[in-house]
Image 1 (cartoon, rainbow, N blue to C red):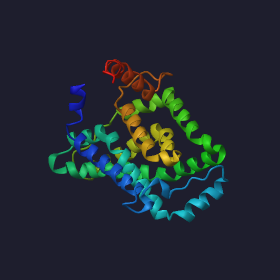
Image 2 (image 1 turned 60 degrees about the vertical axis):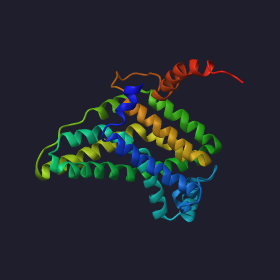
Image 3 (image 1 turned 135 degrees about the vertical axis):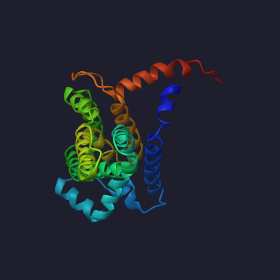
Length: 257
């Protein structure tokens, strides 16, 4: 366990986890009213059982496009940085020292373009799900995410995300490779994470807790080693079972009274 924790103290983990913590802090400050409400989940009111077009109209009436973009951006800053540790390490190690900051910037730009664009289809999917299922939308989203995580298709995409192509050392070709890597990794990340990203969007008042839980699930999936593409227990459930096996004896042996 100590060695596992030490892993997260190495670069770029410290920086990425710090950025993620800052994103969660900004969101939390929005929830308690320290920052404008447009930065908190309450600023996006998913209607219960309403028509999809009425839901879109209500959302755009209560929130300007800029506030929705800001809220989505803060959500991404909170949840996504730990997921790109491996490709960022690859970009840094594959670049000349004087080009490393530029290379990482190119990768992050490509990755961010994909996820900023994903806000539209995911938001519409959340609205449609809420309109169709009402209060059942959130548990159905969780069930769908678990089913997707257990599927062979998810594992194939996750295995592909572990394969990072080489990048060039010099000039515009190196810049293009870093941007292309960011776009490609962003698309693979979106393809693997889409179902889990719907969970916090449908969590209502539990949005912040759902963000934290989803972020941990996605990180656990990303850290899992490549495996054969077949139906298997979702990483989230396997991690919960593993945690219970290790913490169960500690809890049962605690003195009472």
